[in-house]
Image (cartoon, rainbow, N blue to C red):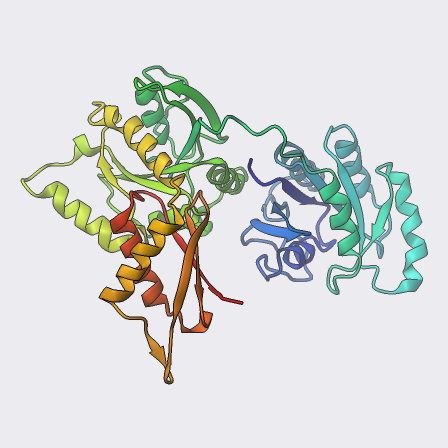
Amino acid sequence: MPNPTLAIVGRPNVGKSTIFNRIAGERISIVEDTPGVTRDRIYTKGEWLNQEFNIIDTGGIDLSDEPFKDQIKYQAEIAIEEADVILFVTSVREGVTEADELVARILYRSDKPVVLAVNKADNPEMRHEVFDFYTLGLGDPYPISGSHGIGLGDVLDEAIKHFPSEESEEDESIIHFSLIGRPNVGKSSLINAMLGENRVIVSEIEGTTRDAVDTRFISESGQEFTMIDTAGMRKRGKVYEKTEKYSVMRAMTAIDRSDVVLMILNAEEGIREQDKKIAGYAHEAGRAIIIVVNKWDLLEKKTDTMRKFEEKIRNEFLYLDYAPIIFVSAETKQRLNQLPDLIERVGMNQNLRVPSSILNDVIMDAVAINPTPTDKGRRLKIFYATQVAVKPPTFVVFVNDEKLMHFSYSRFLENQIRRAFAFEGTPIHIIPRKRK
């Protein structure tokens, strides 16, 4: 089940970005005391009481050419559509404003839970002014200070009460996969070609697909899949349309919902810097990855064209050395019949569990081949290893001191595990832990 989403809404200059950064635990959004200054990332992850969730900062849209009320109305509507819970931020210094009442009317008509936060209540003497915000009709107002973190715990306690439960999880046998990549690499065309019918709008205009569109189908082998089409991601500096930034957020949400991610490249355009950043999202999320080079029919071929293209991919995507590469054409359907089987195989690899006895035999053989490193006269000792999770496969290695487990040796162990077991397409996490 994907992480729930908390959207932060409110009129400009009430401290939405400050609260966003405080909940995220890092300075992500740009914060200045000027209305509408947010121009940076508007999507991240947060955690409270062991509950992970996504956070949206709706201040990240520049609509300076539209009326003020339209801007606020648009932000609130986006939040209603995307969020599970809405954090409505106001300011005690200005009191209840006409803009606050506008947002409140929009949120009141929605069926989404709303938590009302009254920011900038740094001074205890200002707390009595918070009662004025009951007039918004959205329940109890919570006095907070985003800059000092005061009261945010109470707000998050209330928010997570309304997050959806995990009881309605889908059938685990269904493999969910999404297609990600820059605009105009042919994601929607690939879906249509795989389905054999136009279930998704296809256009040469970049960014035609705004929403993630789920399509379910069954392959010839009988495996059931759910395909998630996503809007193309652009560089931040080139995201001009107001809906484009939310397309990035929706693509990230699609990755969270996926078991397998198809990273789509355009054979004609080659590899761009943005391709590496997009693939990095999926890699960091621990999803299984297949690199799909589309529009292969449009490239002029020589005897070693495919080999050279694959070498370039491996050099540019060093962190995806585990990901299989397939060259396809949505137009001619070249090799498309191989994709379902490849997705199924990679999905199974991500769920593979290794018996501890066999895993430890592999680890001990690896240590015999390449002895553990030393640091200042102390040698790393590996006592035992066990697999603790799947999606992605995660292994805990018990050692005498975690600090002695250098990255290079952890990577060596990963390579040995990959040689012994079928983990094609999926990242592997190795966690060193001191034996108690």
